[in-house]
Length: 295
Image (cartoon, rainbow, N blue to C red; front, top):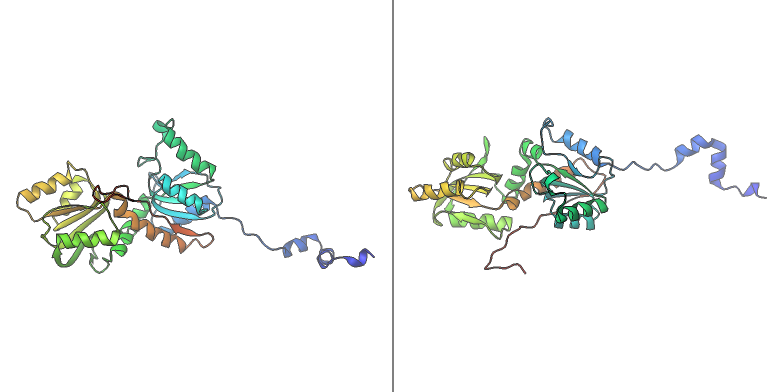
């Protein structure tokens, strides 16, 4: 008889009642949204969130479910495409997505390249979060922490000044080559005597202004920067050398002077975001040497 062929599931539903049966159904956890993830970052970064900041959602909406996270130095189109291919639909980028520090797009909205990149992001259901000010403001600075770890300078850093390092004496040439090897830089630029003795080093990851740079030059044998205006700090160091001072300047390029800081950011995110995969995607060095063309 039909009544005797009731399934166990149907019998259980009938005996417990519909509300009780619903409670026995497997629970499907609600997907983590972009907004929820950003809230976690704000809580975990350890400093008050600033009212005036570039750190904001550049693309996507707070309601977007997060499938995976790509952490990167800069959300170039190449990085965005690689993240999409890995199904990592939230990109956390240290530097801008749209070519200016504030990510203002009013003046380029009719530009075909902007439209191509913007449309690609939208079509692939992606979000991009700019994470610059508060990652630098974290104690200790997230970028500096990652760079120091990547270079193996933990034992050399001054505990009172995370920009100052002391090393066993070496030559400028050997010091620069060691940095180049560890960071895999193709286009490092160096100003100074290759045989200059180096012990004290000041590092300014990313961009450095003239007045900051002058202060650093006065405290060390060599200053390491990501980038600086060539008619400002570069000229100042050239003049210092011509005046007889034993000084040097190493220019890494902005990307590679901070990139390891975002590699460390991916590790940090994994500590409090277990629901989805988190992966570091390196932005490619933009330059290559004319005597060693890229294949």
